[in-house]
Structures are given as C-alpha cells and as structure tokens.
Amino acid sequence: MKVDTKEINPAFLSIIQNPSQKVFLDANFFIPPDKSKVAKVKAYSLTDFKECWLIPLLNEFSGLVIHESVYDELVADGVKSYTDEQVNCNPSKIKIHYDSELSSAEEALRNTYMNKIAVHSLYNPTRDNAKDRGEVRSLSFMAVKQYLFFAANDALPVRLIKNAAELDTGLDDMQIVQMYELIYYLCKTEKYDKKALRILYKYQYYLTPGDKRTNPDWGNFIEQMDVLYNGIL
View 1 (tube, rainbow, N blue to C red):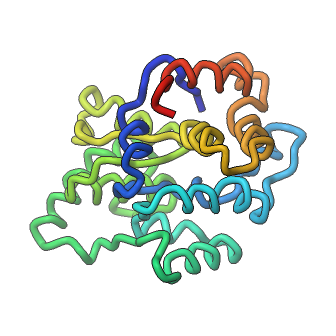
View 2 (cartoon, helix red, strand yellow):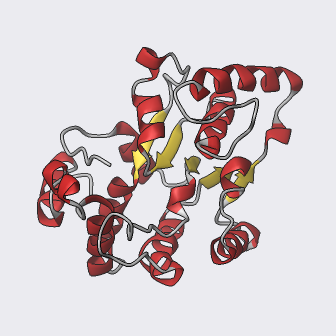
C-alpha cells in the first residue's frame, strides 16, 4: 500500500472534525495483519492489535459501521467474538448494515452498482465467491444509500473510489479514508501508545524493500502529515 502525504484528504479531515459521522470499515480493520509470508516477522496477535488499534479507533469514532458482507469475513473466533461484543455493547460501538434494509427498487440499483464495480475485482456476483466480496458488496450498498466514507487498507477500494470516473464504478461521490491516516490521528491525540502505533505503521507500510522504496519512514511520515494538517491536529 502506498502512503500519500502530498495532499490533504478531505474525507479524513471531515471525519476527524466530526467523529460521529458514519464510516464503513473494511474487514482488514478488524483482522490482525500477517506478513510472515513476505518478511521474517510474526503475525500480529489479536491482543496486540486490539490494544494498539481497535480499542483506540472505537474510542475515538462513534459512527463506525460495517456491511454484513464484511461481518461474514470475520471468521476467526477471537475476531468475530470481539466484533460481536462491540456490536452488542450498550451503547453499541459498531453497527451492522444488512441488504435486507434495501427496498426492491434499491436492490435493483444495488445490483447495477455491483455489476459495474465487480468487473474491476475478482468478485463474481453470480457465483458470490469470497474474493473481494466484502469490498464490492459494501460499496454497492453504500452507493445506493448515498453513504460517503469507506475506510480500508487495501488497494482495490482505493482504486475503485479514487478512479471512479475513469472506471465508471458509479462511486464518484464516495471518499476513502486509509489506515495510515487514522494511525496518524491516534498518535496526535496523545492518548495512546505512540511506540505501538509506530510499530503498526512500520508493519503495514515500511516493512519490505518495496515498502521502503515507496513510503516514508515513521519520522518523515509524521513530519509530512504535520505539514499537511498543521493547525488542524
């Protein structure tokens, strides 16, 4: 994943200024990352991922939601049970949206969006296969309901949203928020473990030789983001 510190992201700016806004999350925000196959590192434990990422994120933003297709991807026992706890606590920290909320007319429109989006992914709506299912079905639902913000750490939704006009996905009004932006925000609140956030950033964006050719190290990342968001954070 490429870290972009060149331009202010209006979506990121909007949700940190109004953290109660509805933001749909991709599954990779909940599943501890595992890069053991591409580098000599261990996978994140759920305990560490919760402490440095999930708990702070859920504390700071009250409008976090997921589509049912993303919920279906959270199959690991610990991840699913933790998500269920956040859904069922009072007040709920995560809400799930279901396709059953769609009217017949909205279902037809959802299918139109889904077919336009799916051709740029590995998801086949006819087969309803697992690959890219969560992203495609989430974005299709959001497009029908005119929800604006999707948060992810995956190249596919970034491309589908940022290149919406070129790809004719119909997602022209949607905006993307990326994990590194939220890591930066959590760091700047001064409430959470900065060392743990730095380690998470390095694991996600500055681990492999390819990452290091593309992305800034932690110190430069913070400096460059500070320049972008000077006076805001």
